[in-house]
Image (cartoon, rainbow, N blue to C red; front, side):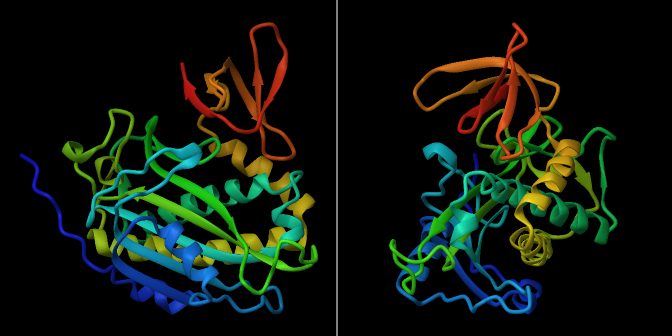
Length: 299
């Protein structure tokens, strides 16, 4: 029999020291939804970026009652075991709405998350149980370990009250990056057979609270640094990111099946990413297809 865990307000001293604003609650429906609501009503504001320095706000909860994933999927988590955070960053509207580069925002979120997890593991002297337990990204928004889902990412655009639908392209919008991570979830709590938790693959980890704070601190710094570089040179950074993602792309070289929102599917080998961060899928007849919005599973 599993005992229901009680939610408690996250304690995030390290994250608070580096973020511009931290909102921590014991429970909410969705940290992304709460961040969007607070940005919309003006209770969460982000200062203008100055000298290339980006402001980053954090909204954290110990329990989400209606966590959301991509394409309407639910994100199931347990308090005191799973990190549920949203990171809000102001970026130029022209970049956020440019389909030739804005797909890289999601990839940046994935790379920031891998950096934060690997950095935390190294800081505490922890180590993988097996040599093949590397952290990877499953295009476009999952963190994988040993072929299983350890975390999920959801990026959403929010229009701040100071900006409107008819605003200039030079105006800023806010991107909210939701990051859910199974950090200390025991095997009996895993929501699906395809999911996993960091503690099942890495020994020597600190307590859940320390992990959550150390990872979030690194994510704030990672978003600030990587997004500042991307804003300064989107096209140049896109090519650099393409090479970086190639090394951690779990699907690359595998036979996968893409499931589209209209119910159709496409099967082939995941070759890599295009310049706009879309997935290249090569079917059996040798034709390369571009996949921009789909759930991708390995065969």
